[in-house]
Length: 395
Image (cartoon, rainbow, N blue to C red; front, side, top):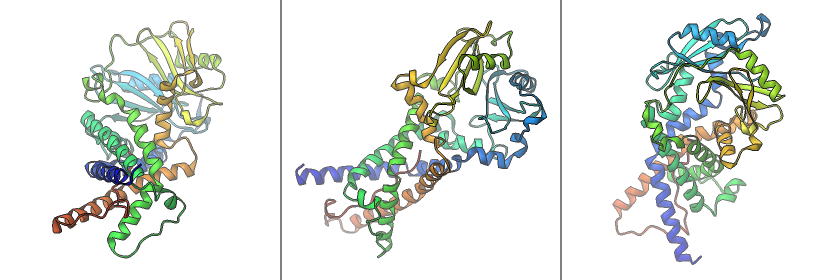
């Protein structure tokens, strides 16, 4: 590439990098901090509300049907949507979800599956979930909807696009410093606040580059439905229940037993009695031999609600590229695919977001003031002195 063209492209990439960081800075900070918190959302929820989640398997016999009936009594006017099942080895309440008959907010009943005791209820949705009642769920809504429903989710998606642009253009701008920064051979300049901020911004940006790109792309993939017409038909983006409530002569326990016979080694994560196109049990989970990269909802067993005949058995290996990306996006975005070290890396990436946004904004303001104070002075070419970038935070 000719030197003049390389300098021109670098300056253009720097301009895109700066403006993408500036336009999304505020959202980047909010989403980055909340994302760092949500890496340990289960542990935080259990610590804040121990009675809601601490169950004792020795107290009785496990029954999903009993949890369903308890939730139906708690929400007599609502339709049970399904129940989220905790992983094996983590005794916890079943989170039974119900939607109002007119498509109102989602209600959640937390039920002890061994005794059928209702431990508590929650309400889910932007404008309905309150921080004082359910801080973890409220933080989750702030993370991907800014607690502003569909409009907030659209803002987050646009910020994810800006993040991807910032990461890609930043990679091009700092291509010569990448390896030196990754191998700790890039010195930390300490002479003057601008030099310190520039070095800190560059080092943090390089070390979080790959993870931030992964987070932005996976977030965009998960929320791509934001750009569809169906998403805007309801305030929360979810379809309202239609038609009569599904029915079955068989219990949820019988359905799960049939699912395990159809797929030995099946661990359920979500159980649902669905009405369309015909009444049927839909169970999502994982096989004991599956990689954790696919998450806890990769395998599926579908049964006819009348006679529990097997309608479908699905493993992630059988899906096409699009289906596999659907399964990979959520666990990769959450950091739940690895152990404690991986999750701590996700936390550090989230905490680095405010630092990147703040230093990037201060450096941009400094450059802007210099240009205004000395309008006739041409900037030093980027090829000979790298210009600091703006933030590359988590979405």
